[in-house]
Image 1 (cartoon, helix red, strand yellow):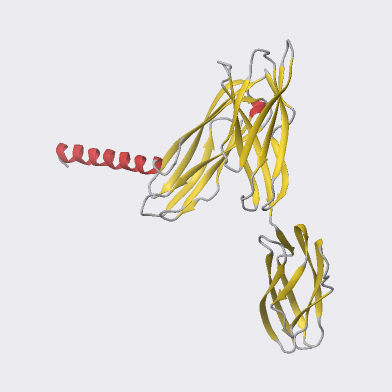
Image 2 (image 1 turned 90 degrees about the vertical axis):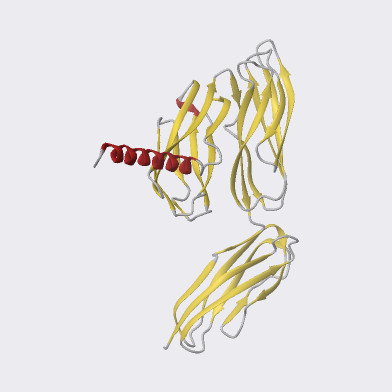
Length: 326
C-alpha cells in the first residue's frame, strides 16, 4: 500500500472516530451537574437525560465512576432510535469535605465504541446544618396536596438566605427566618406539593440563594412518594387447577387515599362472582372473589372496580384460571 493511501486511510479512520464521538456525546441533554454548596450528610441524586439520536440501536456496555463517593447506573441499557433513558447518579456527601468533582464514564459499544465522560460536583460544608437529610413529604395520595418543613442553620451570623427555588414545578418552596444570634442564624424552609405528579417515588432539589460569596447557593434534596388514588392487592389473581364444580376463592384488598364507595364491579359472570362487597364508604374495602368453573379450560378475564372517587376512581384486576375435570 502506498504512503498516500496509508495516510488517507488513517485520516478517514480519525474522521470516523471523531464523528462517532460527536454522535455519542450528543445523546446527552447535559454532561455536567453541580449541586453547589451542600450540608455534609445527605445522599444527593441526579438523572442525566439521554436520547438515542442516531438511526441505529444504541447499547450502553457499562458505567463507571472516578470516586467511591459516587455511584451511577443506566436505567436502561438498550435504546432504539429516538428512545430515551437516564443515567442515575448518587453522591454521598459524608465521604468528602470541600470541593468534590467526580467523572462518570458511560461506555457505548453500539452503534459505535465510545466512552462519554459526565461530570458531577458538590461542595460539602460543615458551617451549615439541616435537621434532616432531606425535605420529605412522605407518602401522599395521588391528587392530594402536602406541606413539608425543616430547619436550616447557618453557622455564620452574617449569612442570609434570600430566596428559594425548586427544580420541579410541583414543589413550591418558602423561607422564614426563625432565629438569629451572635453565633448562627436559623431558617425554616417549607415547601408545598402541588397535585399532578404520577404515582411513584420522586426526588428533586431545592436551591437556597444566599448572600455569601463562598456559598451563594445551597442545595437541599426533597423527596415524595405518590400513592395511586386507588390500589388493589393483589393486582393479578391466578386460580390454578380448579376442579369443575368445586369453586375456590380469594380476597382482594382495595385501598383509597380517602374513604370511598364501590359503585359497581364489572366483568362478573357465572364463572366469577364477588361476595362481601360493603356498600358503605371506607378507605379500605375487602371483597371475596369466587372462581366457579362449569367446564374445563383456561379463563382470562378482567374485573373493573368502579368507585365514587372523583379522580382515578377505577381499578382493574386481571383474573386468570385453569379449570380441570374432577
